[in-house]
Amino acid sequence: MKQVNIAILGCGTVGTGVARLLLQNGDIIRERIGCTLNLKYVADIDTQKERGLALPPGVMIPDAAVAIADPTVDIVVETIGGEGIAKQLILDAIGKGKHVVTANKALLAKHGNAIVAAATEQGVDLAYEASVGGCMPIIKTVRESLVGNRICAMIGILNGTCNYILSKITDEGLVFETALAEAQAKGYAETDPTLDVEGQDAAHKLAILSALAFGMKINFDDVYIEGISRITPMDIEFAAQFGYRIKLLAITKFDGRAVEARVHPTMIPFDNMLSNVNGTLNAVSVSADAVGEILLYGHGAGMMPTASAVVSDLADIARNLASDGAGRVPVMGFQPAEIRTIAVMPMDDIVTHYYFRFDAMDRPGVLATIAGILGKYAISLKYVHQKGRKTNGSVPVVMLTHHAREADVIRALAEIGALDVVASTPMLIRIEDDNGQE
Ligand code: NDP
Ligand code: HSE
Image (cartoon, rainbow, N blue to C red; front, top):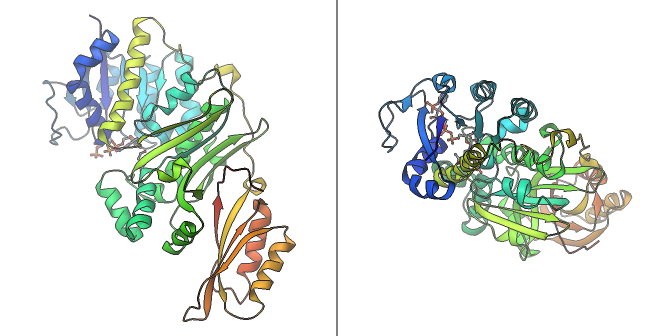
């Protein structure tokens, strides 16, 4: 039986999981794909660390370059992370004609176009299922299963750390810092957790998904990014009173002219399935012309779920090797010549529903002043709510709007925030209602 030789570069959380899965489930993988995924090398700078892996002698090595230089290695798995050495090793491996699997969404979001171009030129496969949504097969779904569809939107909970934090604050009243520390202890957060809580990690993933869905170049720089660090328990409580939960959503939509690509805290109705995706779980809904809507749900990170996605890529490439089919599925789901630059809609042009919270002085006429400014910018209110008096004289005033344009909202809030009767920077949370209300 044929054997495909694999080198894993970086034996941390994900690399260890991949090695473990190949050792533990090698038999069933072989039964399914008809060849052996042979773990030839595991390269990590620390070869002595106890990882609970029973690797045969000679497999663990300190120098990734040795694995790349070995002509018998067919597939290189990059699980080091970051944009430095990982990028160089991937390009070196591609240059040597090796197929590459990576879980590195930050690298793909920022340097993906160059890496894809290198792989395409070399005629090697580049697979990255684990880079978005952990074990959820979203890349395969978009690249292969939905090939007959025009995709119009994808909306996802793509960061487990943020979802864990928001769920813990909402359901257990935990404070932000405690919830973040718990997510870190579970191994979900990035090495630099600001990438999670400030939304960049979800934006990396969204940039990859937008490109795949709409046949465009990866465009991370134009993704609008807002994290969850400003969300307060008070906003979560108000959201619940109006029938919403707050989630960090990654949203991409295409109307045939421009693409929306934005990551921000969003209120979604209780009856939207995404509002019930809690803890570290991820989910993504895809809307497309033939299927309507589908939803994928599962662990977006963690050792073994992420390893499962990497191994699915390894199996695909091994099957391609067996049938001389490298490049059978184009790296970005479209033929390279068909990939276009599509404009990302400026955030100013987004039209949606909004939640505002103002800390306003409890004085006659204040509400009328705020409403007047909103009216001046053509922002129509659906609901206004003022809660009891605070000791310092300000009270939270909460408003929900009908459809409004982001540019108008930003200008209006800047004007309201500058009023001396408004005590702090106004809070704005976008609402994603799919019931077609104005
Ligand atoms: P880890 O930090 O746990 O693992 C990275 C490993 O690579 C470490 O053991 C590190 O050693 C080692 N390493 C660093 N430099 C080199 C080098 N030059 N040669 C060989 N090994 C090296 O990261 P994760 O496993 O968590 O993440 C890996 C990638 O997968 C990242 O891109 C991440 O974003 C992505 N990912 C992670 C998920 C998760 O659940 N953790 C989920 C989905 C994607 P040392 O520690 O000594 O620096
Ligand atoms: N830090 C990421 C998360 C890991 O919290 O979802 C998976 O990409």
